[in-house]
Length: 353
Ligand SMILES: NC(=O)c1ccc[n+]([C@@H]2O[C@H](COP(=O)([O-])OP(=O)(O)OC[C@H]3O[C@@H](n4cnc5c(N)ncnc54)[C@H](O)[C@@H]3O)[C@@H](O)[C@H]2O)c1
Image 1 (cartoon, protein in one colour):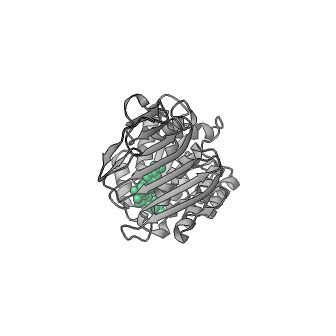
Image 2 (cartoon, rainbow, N blue to C red; image 1 turned 120 degrees about the vertical axis):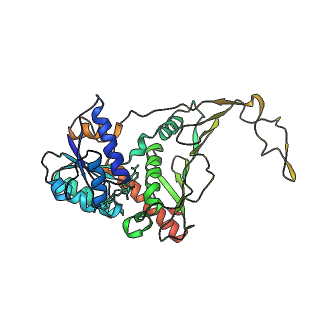
Image 3 (tube, protein in one colour; image 1 turned 90 degrees about the vertical axis):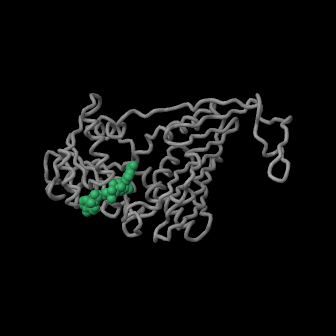
């Protein structure tokens, strides 16, 4: 299958590079990069320098009968029009996240693909991140730290909102659509339970028209509490993941998969000694010591390389089901819209999602 990329910026060029590497790997359905189209002549020139065909326009690209599928990696406000055009041209489609600017627009976009009978998948690639898969392993298997009842998932940068369009509301900017969408998708993949309520706060530290960070707290029907944090104002990061179980606590420090699990050998240490803390004394906050806890390495999980592309190609060939489906994507949007309402109105949203 030949695939072309629309929008050859940061993510579009990443896709092109991955596809070139994937086409050299022996396993899975073959995919070959046909070329790119970018509205910016400088990006088209860069592609050519790299030996990649640069189509003169989107019409030329979509009119190329040898192209079976497209990847749309433009700014968020341009996704919908390209999905509509690509579906009408009979191409299978991968669209970058966030697929749309709203739940309603996402529904319309699935409508274009359904009407045309083409495969339409949103690139929720962080389902294959090793840190997420490792935490999911901890969540799914009680022998690690017992039954998990609280998770904290966070990403933190210290450089504000990057680029230009990410700062503009009309272009689908803001950190909820940028990173929130990934962390919420991961959350809903991990916790297979209904959302009962949520509370969200947006931050505007840099004074942009869109939020530069968000903190979302979710309560699930199965009792799990989940905190999602996206920050762009932090110079000293907290761990990527903190996971609390009935028998221990796990920390994944960052994408390098550093961290570990601390398991309770004795759940309550009645003999715990107190410590001096500031101007006082505490037993409650004293660290666990000695043989009442044990340290364990993280039960690491590594994703298969190119798993998303492999699945997409197999799904196009009718050999596998697509990994990312409409109901999942729309549920993430329902949750993001409830979170926005919570942040704007400063309310707990009690809604089954
Ligand atoms: N899944 C991920 O891990 C991930 C990571 C980064 C970005 N993204 C997503 O990828 C998309 C692009 O983000 P980016 O960081 O690459 O942005 P970017 O600004 O680096 O690149 C966007 C490119 O699209 C081009 N473009 C703009 N309007 C166009 C149009 N009408 N037709 C053709 N090309 C057009 C721009 O010239 C630019 O080269 C966004 O939807 C973003 O959310 C996803």
